[in-house]
Amino acid sequence: MTQVKQEATNFHRSKTPVETSARALQILAAADELLAERGPDHVSMRDIAERAGVNKALIFYYFGSRTQLFEKVLERYYRSHAKALTTAFSGGGSIHDRVRRAIDAYLDFMDQNHLFARLVMQEVAHHDDGKLPQIRANMQQLYELMRDEFTDLLPKEGPMSAKHFFVTLSACVINYYTYAKVLRGVWNADPSSPEMLRERRAHVQWLAETITTRLIQDALAHRVQA
Amino acid sequence: MTQVKQEATNFHRSKTPVETSARALQILAAADELLAERGPDHVSMRDIAERAGVNKALIFYYFGSRTQLFEKVLERYYRSHAKALTTAFSGGGSIHDRVRRAIDAYLDFMDQNHLFARLVMQEVAHHDDGKLPQIRANMQQLYELMRDEFTDLLPKEGPMSAKHFFVTLSACVINYYTYAKVLRGVWNADPSSPEMLRERRAHVQWLAETITTRLIQDALAHRVQA
DNA sequence: GTCTATAGCGAGATAGAC
DNA sequence: GTCTATCTCGCTATAGAC
Image (tube, rainbow over all chains, first blue to last red; front, side, top):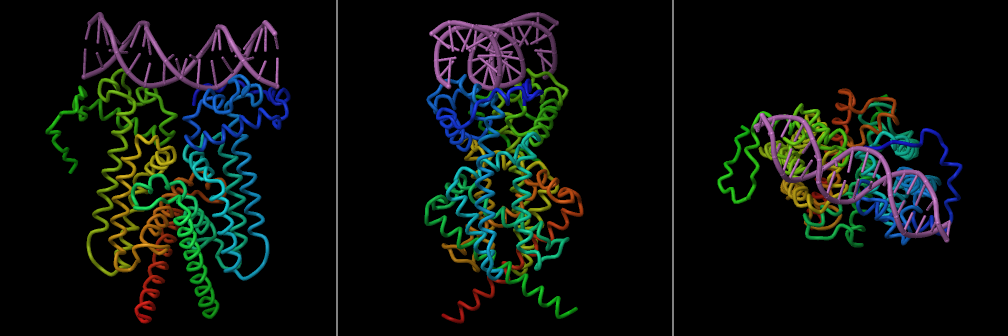
């Protein structure tokens, strides 16, 4: 948005110490919390320093710049997100079982990382175009996992292709979390409460099962025709 | 059509002049474009002034502050959004017809207001808590429209309640547009192209029809049991 | 109504003592 | 490694000429 000074050379990278020092981790944790609470554009380095209980200058010492710090935070999330999902998608069983397991894992991850949904949404929503590759890589991986899961059930192109089911299902999962704060006032219930989270899970599972069933029916009907 | 409601009671001590001057409209248009392109936190008053071809100070003359200007822009969107949807939801026909019509209208609106999805997502994602009431009012209206549409088909509570279908369907519509820029690199197709937009529409309509059909089946089965 | 000029603040980032 | 002090910049907002 404003000053894009340094970073022309990777001069800083060599200077940056190991990111696993105690102080560096405090900073990361504070940045993590604040980013998720307020979004990248409403968090200053001063805020982070205060919450981490360290000096502002130390952030620059460890991470070089605001941008690089925020990238590190996202990176951590993306790594654990990817890990949670690859394990969920592995393993056999019927298509129903595999889908159910994958969705459970996706929802588990969201429940355990309440902040992730909003964080990613914010990134996607503004896409500085600088962060875009990182976001894209993460989404691509998830897309390919899902596509391969449904590979024998779906056409490669058209309205029934994996492309669309990917958007549809991920939207149903992620938007519940991003909308939560708004919905709290609209419904007469708290969307983040354990009961409502269970309810939402039941809904999404019902949806996935309904879709899968219908797809199987259609596939059979088509095979009979041919 | 765009008949402005008489601000009968100007008890708001707004020294702001009428917002319908030519210059004021130029400013609104520029703000609109830039907000959607970059998001509220990456747009300065200088940017807006330049694009509108007016002086920066004039913005403050007409709108008082940055915040108030941005509120005006959102307000316009919310009004036209609400209008588009209320007309779409009115009218009779079978449940299938009514749902199909509502979704078409929702997608039409998104196609004609490419920027809206990102704008709202950004607002939802950070929720300054100041803008929250405005966002909430808009969402509430849409929710109630959909709830009333399905009122005889859905239970009032639980995983099959209108609450969840509202999140599910609105997510499927809106997320396609918010994700578009990211997906452009993941797929081998442009999500914003007319062909892909048509494809997406077909997908969402298929989904809605599949859901509705299943709900009707379940309702019948339940009635038989009882 | 529309402009120029500028006040005043808070941000990211750096220098250098310890 | 960690701090204090400070520099520079862009931003919102206002004062005041025309």
